[in-house]
Amino acid sequence: MFDSSELIVIVTSSGGLGIFLLGLIIMTNGLQSIAGDALRMTMLRFTNSPYKGAASGAFMTAILQSSSATTVAAIGFVGAGILTFSQSLGIIFGANIGSTFTGWIIALFGFKFNLGTIVLPFILLGAILKLFAKGRVASIGFAIAGFGLIFVGIAMMQESVAGFENIITPDILPNDTIIGRLQLIGIGIIVTMITQASSAGVAATLTLLYAGAVNFEQAAALVIGMDVGTTIKALIATIGGNINAKRTGYSHVVYNLFSASVAFILITPYVSFWEYIEPNSLMENSEVALVAFHTFFNLLSVFIILPFTNQFANFIKTIVKEKTNRFNTSLDDILLKEPKLALNELLKSVNKEFIVILGHINTIINNNPTSVRMDIKELQTALDETHEFIDKIHLHYKDGANWDYLVSLIHILDHLQRLHERCEEEEDRAVLAKQTDELDDIVQLLSKTVVNIIYFNEKKQWKKAKESSKNVASLIHKKMHNYRKETANKIAKGEIGVPEGSARLEAIRWLRRVSIHIHRINHHLNNAILASAK
Figure 1: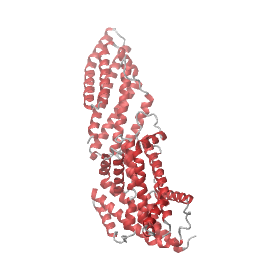
Figure 2: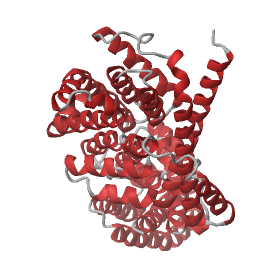
Figure 3: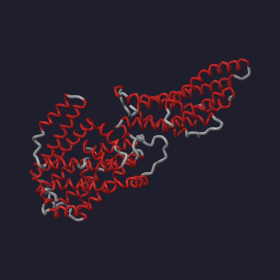
Figure 4: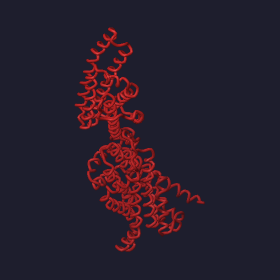
């Protein structure tokens, strides 16, 4: 067991690590509020090649100090269909490079300069801005306070490291053998799982290296393990996720294992290279050398894998096979962090559902349909899932275009549900309409309009679809009055019975209601498209 002095060292070091981690979280939240959306849009513009994607992923991670934020954004873009899975891989690869930026800050400033006291006024300044300012200025204050806490945490760890000489030494850790290094990698993975941040683990490792509690080879193995440990979050994120989330998560795991293998092979050559340049230079600059090693193996791994991005993507696709789901393949809760992306994915889903229902309507009213019947239960399940997802998006009318976007999608979904009910519960009315000569011109007009709307939809001619559906709904509404009058006269003359007359009236009501739902869906679909472009 530890004596009182050793216990104080452990507690102080743990507290320093905790303050460092808290500062990192606060700074990350502040930076995301300041520049998160702008950086994501910037990242999006530079994904036309894997190399540019890697550069943008590294840049975003370095600025936001969170590889998770970069990964989540990439997953969101893929889920919304803005990026292909292959394009997102460059961003995922680059995020690993950006994650080494924190280590450089610690190695160059945390140990070279005693900033723990100097940054205290900045923490106060940041807190004041957060408490009394609003909007962007408050977020800047949050980031400043977090940045200051990072160096306070480093200073606390630095002050306590001298006490580690009798607690942790290179001798009590696994030997510098292949098995020993693998064991240290395992320890690094566990550390990251506990701290939930590889930056915190790297900071702790740099502190131990600075104190001489671990040698360079041991520190390098620990850092490799911490890189691998970041994949735990990705694995957890895939639970219950859609196909794109799973593929992105598994690609992060596979890539980091590959990167770790490269790093593991490089440990001995890297140490030999430093000794070759100048004996003892590694010992004198061990903190910088460790961060340089972290950056080097991540850069090398990226440059090795980038030319084979498409092959890597195909490999991941063979591991994570896509399940048959025509409607909601990408409605993942992870998108809720980015409302615009969630709305874009919802638009895709409701549009797919709309096209399937249109095809079904064309089938049941047309003697020579060009479409196929839908699976009533499958579509109902899809509509229910869409409803559940849209219920999780909460906005305010002050959100502008996104608010209009959401309201339009809610209207579309409402009309889709009612249109589905017309097809599920009242198909006999559609069949009767098709068999009634007096309704033939209306049926043919509706069928032709449905086919045209499907075509306009495929060509993204939303305004034409809206105008076409409006015209047919208006025409059916006008013809309904004359048809009801004629049907009533036939019942009065005894030409048809009351049951048959009632059935005919229900048939034209079905045509009218269906035409109205189709028109309203196209109207709100057009509004949603306009809102999505803002």
